Length: 303
Image (cartoon, rainbow, N blue to C red):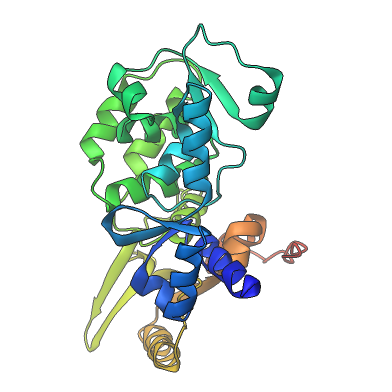
């Protein structure tokens, strides 16, 4: 049973730290999921979602140390899918709060005065959470958080843009970039991270979940550029969970190629752990299109 419970943890990690019952059931028996919930390995969150136990533990630690859950830990507590799980927990304290060495080592602390409502709830509000993450986390991680917050309807793009415009000092530029780039159409953190990499190429104009309409062809791709007829596919954990899905996607890729669309397919391991290889693939496709010699691929990282 311990191995089965570990499987639940691994599936949740691959799905961004939270998932619905239906998403989990694509990979795990119902009895295993229920056992994980009973055993405290996962906890039920709002909207019928399941989260890793770490969310509950982080909130308890923040409460015990008289702090407020913030940044990446707040994002997970809000139920948003993230690229990486917070470890240690992110906690914000009043400017006058002094931590013991033990508590300081157990958290990723920051100090500032938060609104009373946030302190009473024990967690920073959704918009503030996204902006806080945008100021200190890598761009790809924050874009995944912002996309998820929009997808869940916890913030609006206008709220993010307005809040980011008021940021000054460290991280202000990235906060504004994230606010303008965030898109609720991104299906999951992997697609968000892939888009973050693709945004480094000004030649591309990619839309998430782009619908390809052509004479005799209809297909939806994870990221699509109509002018270049380029599709980027994030082959995530759920991409081919059944033979039906495999057959559907194989036919879709073939039809896209017949209609002169180029399809670059990327695995979860490459997008999440080997972004340099993903950059090489996109850059090389653009170079080859211009007749420029393609360099050899970088050494791929072990995953």
